[in-house]
Image (cartoon, rainbow, N blue to C red; front, side, top):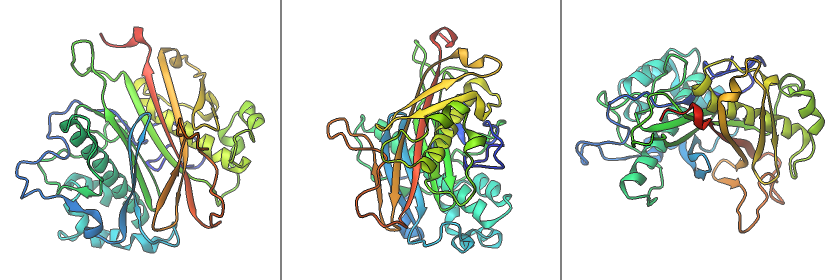
Length: 361
């Protein structure tokens, strides 16, 4: 099954019962970032709360605002030592720093996870989506002006909206927002955008659009999963993306499938197998998506977009390589002279809409 990380899990696939793609749940609870007293709810700098954590990046992707949170100065992404501060006994302490930036219900959910690394990834994802929600919300309040560095989180209390899982395992956002979460070991990523409105300006009762995000390391320690996650046609197409090796492209295609599956799940609510989709990444950071679900559910879907980029981190900084329409930067190539041990992952995003005749009017 799909896990919140959106990574290879047993190599069976699909679909988003446990994925962190989300739709709003039309709840009326106070949206993330709302405050009743600016002095009481002073923003918390993540780096002041815990110097080992940082807001790694904030990107405006075609599908929405994307925020990444990660461990700083780490040398071994898979090391459980990085997550010592998320040991059950540690987080159970009422004074633990993470309790100031996550909802009590989110803390309780994280504590049910089986190991420190799983708890760390879960909490990272929630921090990332809270940063993304705050960023988008504040931008709306400022009339579309982006003035926030997104390195801050307001304290979260019981009266705030809890980003817990809905009946499908997707995190439930405040009314008015769509979003998705992905996390990989020491990195959490969230994608958020405002939800669509009907012709009367009201939020649709059922979702008409979904978005998804996924991160995958560009190098895998495991045996190639190509034959498990790619169709025969996709296998034959490998090797045509400029600046991306064949092994990397397998993981890139896997990541793109994850983001598309997450985006479509709120619209179709069903399992989707790896062999029911073909996604071809292009060198400019776009991707062609072909769906052929066995029950024909894809015929209800309209516009589908998918994008990708390579994000590199050296432990202290993050560089994102993406398509710039004017400069024509290549999206997937490593930079000249880049250290071979530089951490890098593929960041993919997707948006899926219902066909116009399937939308609520």
